[in-house]
Image (cartoon, rainbow, N blue to C red; front, side):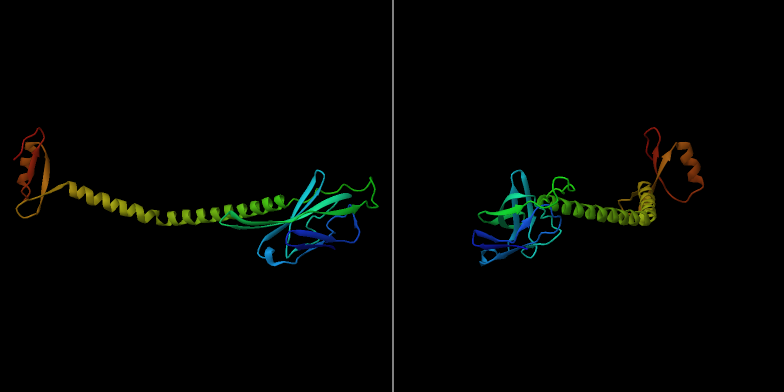
Length: 215
């Protein structure tokens, strides 16, 4: 295990021999000796030329399988910590750098290809994709529930619309008598049709003759 110590912004390292080309084998422990790092999300940064890796610390450690797969050479190591609230960065802590020497392994140039170094940013992106997939699945389930509910109530809605249409039709076929607020049925037709209807009905009608006349 590689041991790192942080006091304020000073970073030191104590390490046994670290050989290159291991895969999901190396581990690291970060000991924060001052309280000013409490509550921060901590990230270890490893750089060797164009090679760069960010690995988030879990319980101030990097366990085997987190992608600390180092090639031979001089690695510059630093640590950052940050605190966000409501998506805004409110605090960030940094350290100076230390050099971690990784010696060549016995695999040689004909060994198996090494996997790419894990990127902390790639880990976060993968987690976001997983969350997005879960949200999409929940949305599909909710839409199915809403569709089922609408189908179940469609017949009731149609019945209510029919009732409303019938009521409106009845209202359009009547007019109020100003004397006693009773409804007077309307007649719309020819005078001849009205006379014929009058012979067989007890109701007195307000007549609207086609052609504009009134009785």
